[in-house]
Length: 431
Image (cartoon, rainbow, N blue to C red; front, side, top):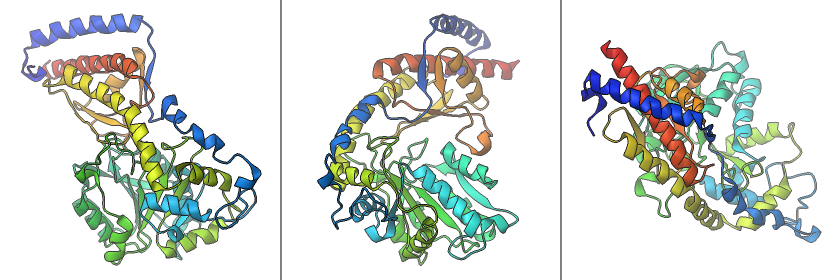
């Protein structure tokens, strides 16, 4: 197709008027679709039904070491759950704490603890004049919400095809001791689906931060979330704990993992993995917070999955359900927008999102038009700190909750809005 920018003003005006008629007809239908959040579909939740009966009698309520999981105790989690989550995180069981139902509360607590009691003996962040975090963008809105809640100054770090711009990361952390952390989704990043290259991981491990209490918040939320049975070579990421150890920075990283999109999204298990020094520090203060997390749920997950291979098999079932959804949206984007040069997108090999980059200045208008036509999407700008996308171009698409048939219609609405908004921008620039 001829790119819109190469078409005459008359052609674009006529096309815009035609597309606007189509848009008004769709609005009149009163349709309702939602591609706003990366929630598992009911069909995905159904494949974990066995969790409900994984522990079905009193005599099954005991861990391998005899711990009665119905009672208090074991604040770091039962050993077999620490082993299961450690295998996901790439860490030995003794370097893992299994907590509640999701990783977000662990990340929140980790930031909060740093503000109240510092990091392994350092000055509490609350007593500092300024605390800063690096934020790869586009990124995960809930990460940014956590640091914004605590009044942290967030600094945008552009994403590349191999991960965050490491030249920028290295320079900033080496010169500014107020920079205390960086948010990372290293595999199938949210929302672009990018996996960090070996070089990127090694450069993270070898950072020389000015702040002794600088930490990498390594949220490996999609570490096993492949859309295809065979994980591609470029999506395999190095073990950050091992690389930090090799580089002489064993304490610099926290790894967060969970089963939130593997088992039940609201009733999974989550864990933090790190060095012995960090884990001992966390356990010391966790003793004031809880006598122990839900060990019955930990036991259910261990009995249901048995081991890490069981998790991998579960993820193949998820992939079979998710793959048609992603391919439906991808095919629609290519069919309706391919060659027009009014946007770009990345088709991921894993994770939960498709990232669309519109013409500058169009994202808010596209999302607004889509909502008026019955399609709810993530707020434009949400993939940037403070919801401020400097180019107004980033749009996150979440295909998981709908059926392929629904996504076909929802994608039609989306691409129609993209075309109209893009033409309006081009015409405005010519006026």
